[in-house]
Length: 271
DNA sequence: CGGGCCACCTGGCGGC
DNA sequence: TGCCGCCAGGTGGCCC
Image (cartoon, rainbow, N blue to C red; front, top):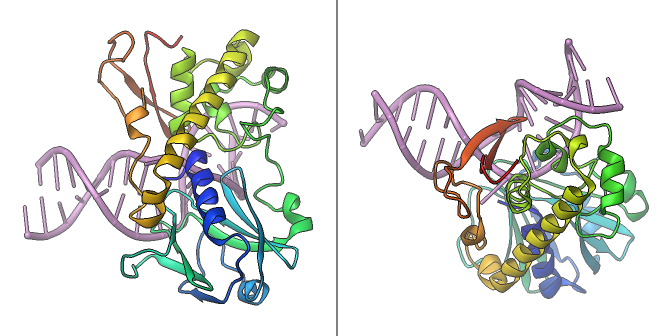
């Protein structure tokens, strides 16, 4: 279930628990995640102190004292659990131990990944090499967006989910931000006015920030229990509401497919 | 190069 | 109860 706010929440949770600690053990139960776990990962990680923890796009980055970065991605179904009280489970693929803390990486669908690279090579890493700005950064502004979209005829929803344009906006937040902006997900990217783009950016940022705040408030539950509490489910205004009345105008919410992904929108409010 | 489609993998749910 | 098909919050590759 991870979108950007959730990954941010995970990174924050890890920072609170294991920043400054060193790896004392690693148990790898299976190597074949989306990409194979490198066989030299344990050698590069064991004994190393975590000097910083950050997030880039939907990747959690653990910066190590030996100038390597441990990179983790949750895919569609991944969880990172800190000292879980539950017994080990089938899809606990990797377990890190740091002094008294256990970090469990669980991912039933194995769309997630764990890898490591020298810090200096991070930007050239396959997954981060061609990525656009962070949605919450100053670089993601209307000037950037209008320039980048000027020749794009792709529907705006597909565009804001394109990591080369802007990273970290998943399907739910794309739907929610477009709803708040009263922009149709089908609108061609290059036909939006600069006022619309400014408004869209503002709504993307507000929605993400709001969800990060919500994630933070239930952080403890999230890391200590099941993980899939759906802490922001209550705040969703359009996602998952097919055929239910729009909360603003009571028109029935539509569900369509765009680039293979479900899109929910109000055909009356969003034009 | 832009844009659409598909595959990767497992589990949950609704329908029959 | 059981089986089947469909669906899922991500991402990159391939093909036109």
